[in-house]
Length: 184
Image (cartoon, rainbow, N blue to C red; front, side):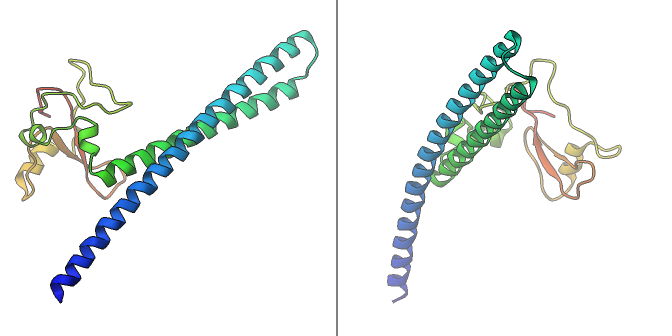
């Protein structure tokens, strides 16, 4: 009886995961369409602003109309940023549902475990620090956060440092990334 209940629960989980993937794919398609529509609206508002500026220079418009077009362009740009954010959030949700986030960004768990990064992860919007300009650990008082982390029961291996941001009560883990180095 318990075995049958466990089988039914497993089947329910499989069905639930399949539905989450289907819903995530639909949301991603809708968000992509929203991004395209927002880009078209932004382009239209940019062209309208350019036309209004030309009319103003020729004396056929007023500054109020130009300001109105600037406001419309700012609103369209805000909508584009929001649409891109929704798309990125739903894309990350799909990767999470599929358990493929690390593979998608090229993060190797063996490299992370050894602390030696052999290949740079591919994360959109993140660039590798130039040589000699690697990020430095911030210090908590006079002690080095990496050394303090080594003393306690939780040991950190690799390019990780515990950091307490000013005014916060929790610790963050900062990953200091330099390919092949892996040191703070």
